[in-house]
Length: 165
Length: 471
Image (cartoon, rainbow over the protein chains, first blue to last red):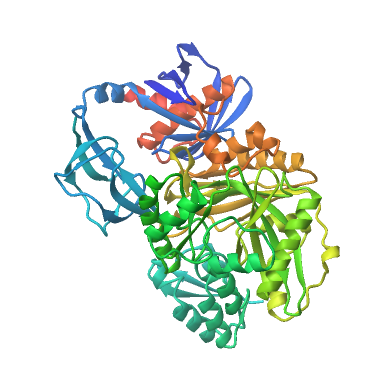
């Protein structure tokens, strides 16, 4: 199985063969691994040195390597191939998503409105702070997906915008 | 001493509930229906036979009505009495009091503003940039920097909304923004017999959105003369207010060393352990003694400060994503230890971090014989810490502690904006990078549920290889 690993700003190719040996960027690496906490933490010995690798979060993809937190994600080549087939949004269409779970305090626009860049669209309250989410560009409000007073999940689409020249 | 805890529905399984001798439910998670309910908390205190109530920090800790209600029930309130809290809790009144005590304040209003029109007028007079602040309370809520008249409307709208939600009053005031300033505060303690003692300062300049992330003592920019001046100013304000129990006077110190009074926090602060580590005092125990009517067991000239301490506030915020709040279940927890390392927290594996309250997860406080030793211990403590399951502020702390300006003590309240997020990912050694890449692959497979739940648990790659071969 082949993986593409983006880690700490670099990209490495990792191949795992049937006997559990692996190659990094085509070079066989003498390494031993021990799962210290199931599905969470591994001890990886490379060239006589031990490294502790902990899966911090899947989403966002973060690992701790010897106590240093880095952005890291492995994608197997089947998934890479599959993702190439997905349809991209037509350009000019924006989905404004909730950056965090919270309470939608206010909606400042209605469907059909044309708003200027940086115009406040909605106010989201999370952990007692109010955050005004603004238009990334001059755009028309195509769809409002949540109303004032509703609880929203992190990542939920709040407003769909279509860019206007 | 027995302890009675209260908890909301969101905190049913919280550690404080488990560790207390008795624990009583307050109701729904929403603070208004639980931790902000004077009635409910008062009733529990009476019913369970409490002889004292410690309000902690946050929620009702700076609520004068709560202090009065507790006292009226014949229960000792561990903090300043309601009348002192009223005097200092309304921020414009505190500014007037400081001015009368001869302590400098930043130019601005000494009454709450009526509306945005008045704010526009005052701001024009004081000159931009200005700071809009909630008159009803602190902690960064209802506070906005306004750089030009064009920003005023939006800032006013958000600050009033936040202030109303946090303090029950939308009132705001305005003062000149002191640029390049450090946030330096003085810890005070006063007994009921007229003794007021300052214990030392904390530099809390490492903050974003006015929420502190790192605090330390001694302050890197505070020399003996400034320390004594700030301590003296804090005592003047406390005496003028008739202060009793622990409190903190906050100041801004500008690049020339001039200082301006900000506010008094009429409660114990989150960062009080920093002062505990350099003075060797137990501030909470002192609070109980003072509330019981005892005299402070030391005079000003008997306070000794030894070494250097810093606190890192570990929060449930994704530092890399601009500190947006994060939530999740703590899948794996490892906290640092060793000489001079203290961790104040209520975390446990399996705990789901609630979104309803403040994002503070844990406080990592280190002490060293000097700042270099404290810094070295802080760096090691960060590397030992693992909180898996949700994104945290830890990468910010690692970055700040490694920063040469921080190491030299050269920073002000603009530090976070200037240094975060970093341009590059942290550097890993070549074989750490390979180990990390292999770990990422293992994590990916674990996440995809392809690793058998039983099995040997010890040779994941061998198992993974076998599984691939069987496909």
